[in-house]
Image 1 (cartoon, one colour):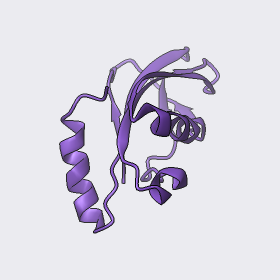
Image 2: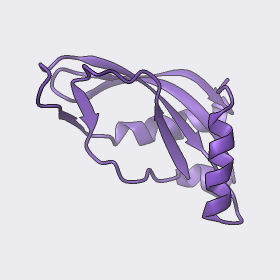
Image 3: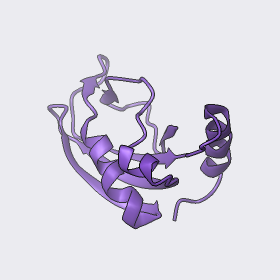
Image 4: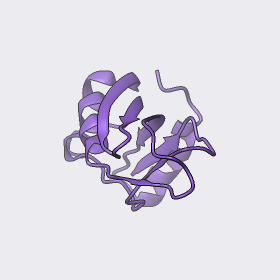
Length: 119
């Protein structure tokens, strides 16, 4: 299970992710049964393209940072109608919660993991 948290929601945000469906657990993490988290700044251009992604923190960093960035790179953005188009920085947290037992266990692990600092 992958949980996405917007760490700086704004009432004036210009851009929103197009697809809100569940995020896919990166295969490289699932094969190795790796769980963890990452905090990223995502820079969206005034044209709605992901300009850059900056890692703020991750745990375990060596295993999480690249698969998480690849996941973020797949995101598409749509403009919100009531806000002028502008470049925007979004800070997001991705929690990768793995359980070989069940989806329910992974959901419970994610709930607990989101309460912890991602360092």
